[in-house]
Every structure is written in structure tokens, then in C-alpha cells.
Image (tube, rainbow, N blue to C red; front, side):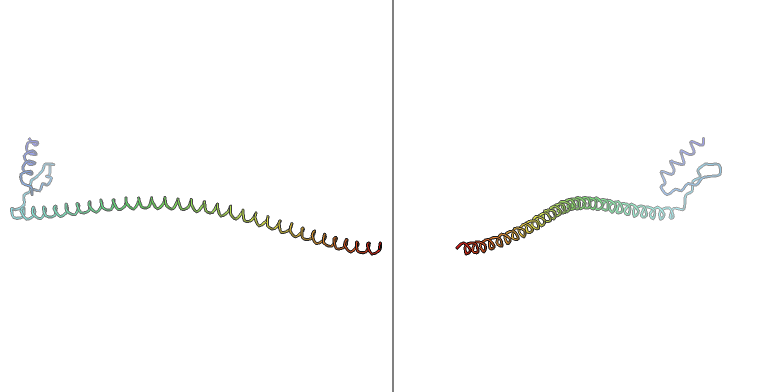
Length: 149
């Protein structure tokens, strides 16, 4: 019997959209119908509020979609920037290696130049000594020739 009453109350609730149900003392549903003018005003206000809430929810979903698109684009930009930064760091590393190798080559060249300058200095000293020896020999020759003659 209670099942039939509950089914009738639910059917009544579907027929009258502004019906409000409360729970009774023994767990049964008690129907409460406000006066007709309050029903129409409350129903209208409720439908307006529901419509406004649905519009707000739609706008929020559009905003969330746009924000997700913006976030995706920002993540792509960040990824591209990180790739560019990585490539720049590789280029900078290669340039630093090249600069290091060039500095080593320059250092070796400066050592070679220093050694060459030392060799040139020694050769100039040898040449000077040879010239002194040649001068002395020429003087000795003059002396020997004058003594012989």
C-alpha cells in the first residue's frame, strides 16, 4: 500500500514542477504545495536563476577552455625556448672549446717564437764571435805577413 502511495506522490511531483516534498514522521513523504501565486513566482524565479546559472557555467567552461588553450600554447613556447637555449648552450660550449684550443695553439706558438728568438740570439752571438775570430785572424795574417816580409 505504501508503495502505491509513494508512486502516486512521485507522479504528482512530476505533474506539478513546483511541488516541494518533506519527510513525514514515519518516513513517508508528505506533499507540500504553496499557494498558486507563490508557485508561479517561485517557479519563474527558479527558472530564471537556473538559466542564469547555466549561462554562467557555460561562460566559465568557455573561459576554462580558452585558458587551457593558452596554457597549451605557453607550454609549446616554453618547450621551444628550452630547445633554443639548449642549442645555444651547445654552441657556446663548442665556441669555448674552440677558444681554448686557439689559446693553447697561441701559447705553443709563443713558446716556439721564444725558442726561435733564443736560437736567433745564440746565432747572433756565434756570428759575433766568428766575426771577432775573423778579425783576429785577419790581424794575425797582417802581422805574420809583415814579419815574413
